[in-house]
Image (cartoon, one colour):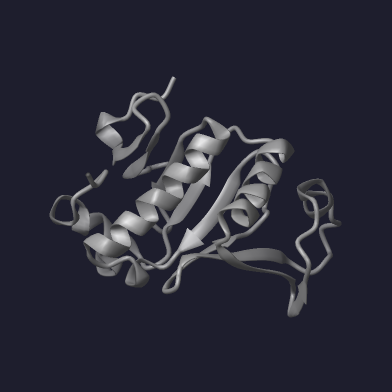
Length: 161
């Protein structure tokens, strides 16, 4: 059974209403959480590409990426949990795992299911909520992974402790 039904949540995935690039995040994270996400990507066999600026490189340890100098090339990790669904991890801070998705790639029940499965895998691995905020409205999540319920749900139904 699907975590969310497309007809119930399609307003949250409308690029005209929400912006096309919502922020997805795991608050209260650590370098170990970042490393767990990197390990998960490899373990799940998802296609991925790590780069610093325009240079494609092997994925380093999270500690190494997060301790880079402020003037270093911007690192990002592109992950495809499915062929046409891309998440881009940005490594902005060690206390929050953050990534972007493109809502134009997440249209319909099948793509929603892929996205929910991706969030659920991250949330389960970290034992933490994974929240999606509308673009430009940081701190106002509309959906997320509820650790205790072990599912993706509407924000108003989430009880984060």
